[in-house]
Image (tube, rainbow, N blue to C red; front, side, top):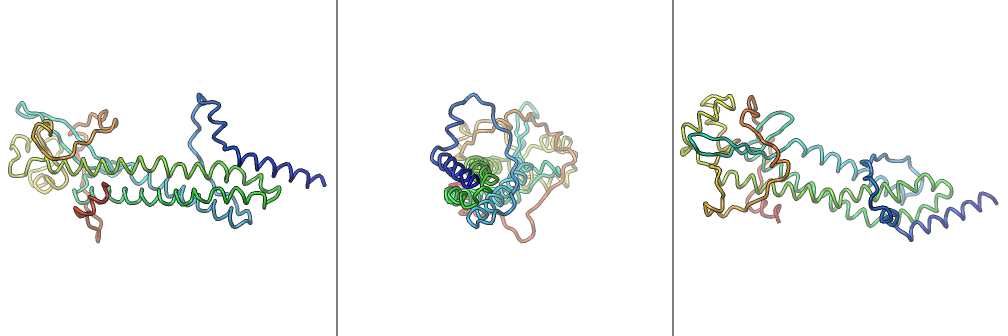
Length: 282
């Protein structure tokens, strides 16, 4: 009888927790310090298919998000200012900061496109999974006293993982879209190989530590340069994209790229077409 009484009390508490969202407690203390980053661990199976399916999907989503963040963290669009003969220039590139490589224009656009598409898939997964949260919570009483062990994963940690997919990932996806715009503008605004000033060419070769043959192969494929003037003053139709705070604070120098290698598209892959790019940026 005592166990039965405890079970009834727990079920009543569970019902109250479901009716009054846990967000109310957060609203009472807005000045509370931010929580530490979520550390998700998949609990052992409970035996209830609704709960186990929900938690397994949360686990899959969590690892997708973690892999997504890690895969994009070292691919960066960067600019470096320099001057030659009294004129200011901007050096522009996409890099793999882990392997110290310039990405080819095709590789850079392909990499960013993958980020946009994967981000969109994760957002859809998170949206779909959010619809199952209530069902999993309502199934908790089926576990009787064992429900205590699964209360936090179902009511707190699972929704937190979903929240990552619905809040954090759209911001990363938008950043990828902005990167694609900036990278596209970099090539459109770049000085054509046949028009680049020999003094600028020599300066770049010296700063990057490359010879003339390498420069000919790299320029306008892996690296781009344009005069540092406002695009609006040139009357270009390129879409102006604001720099991120990281880009503003970077203070990159040409010598930062000394001894860099290059990376091309993976075999069998193709950079997005103009139509595909338009869809990715919409």
